[in-house]
Length: 406
Image (cartoon, rainbow, N blue to C red; front, side):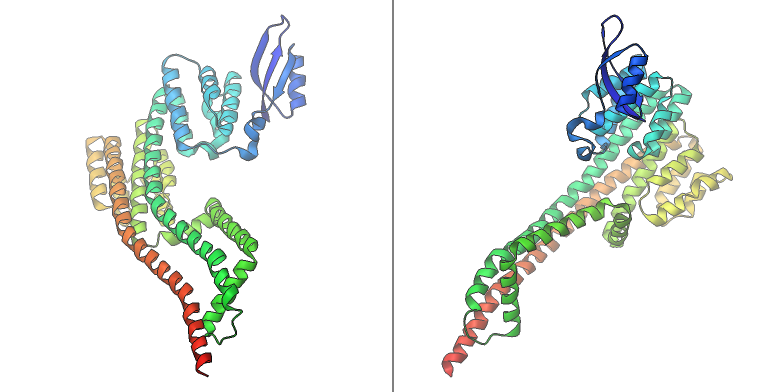
């Protein structure tokens, strides 16, 4: 079923604007006429802003803003359909606009917000859906949205720190590749065109280099096309889940990067578990949901057993005690103290903040270590490029000298 926006006239001639759910546009028009309305305009939000092909997903910051606005509007006494309609009128994200239209339509028909959102788990995630469902059942939906907004905002800041730290090395690597490509396409071919015409003996590596330069010059469009295809393939490999897992698994074997990923996992796990417990989610369900936020396969597999062990009567600290490779001893002891004092959610929140700061420090140390390595790499690449340009000249001069001496 699709959601269609419509403008119509009722029996008294008054204008009516709303949304309707139907399989096709024609079915939507038929339903409107059956309800005594004269359709003036019926269209799907999917056709807006260039269509679904150009639409993007829902970012963490957009979900955080949605939660913040929902908490404020529900607290003021506004109904969910009214609040969603207001947010929908302000959003520019095509995907989010479509989902909000569906939420407004189905909640007006009596469906619960959590039931509608469950149809969009891929967009919002299990943590989001769990907290909304618990908030509805406990009558504290506005508090659930407040917690979600705070948690999503912290997650967004953490992601931005990681992306910001990776931006510098990424720019350097791209610049080196672009510089090398320009040299091979425009500088070396000109040298090759001149030197290959000279009838002098050349070393094998010099001749090979000149032939490669000549090939690049004669097939510049082909080389550029292959470069674009390779860049797209690299980009898509990070977008496809299966290849992304392989790449992440390979990268996280590097000790420095693995340590950062572990700290990010601990911060997310502790922050998510704290937020769920504060929202009134039972600890067994909260552990089951929080374990899904871990990114390292080994940690995720082991954490999936946490809820089962707690259900058997073990405390959280006892469960974590057997996972010292994932969760450090200081965190386990702090959680044990929180369990004894009855402030587990508060302790977890503090641990999440602590490890978010640790991630920040680790990223700074990593980038400070990476900078001199990149400088050495750039120097080596520049040196190789200089040798690549000078080697043919020396080879030709040597060939000319041998010819003259004869």
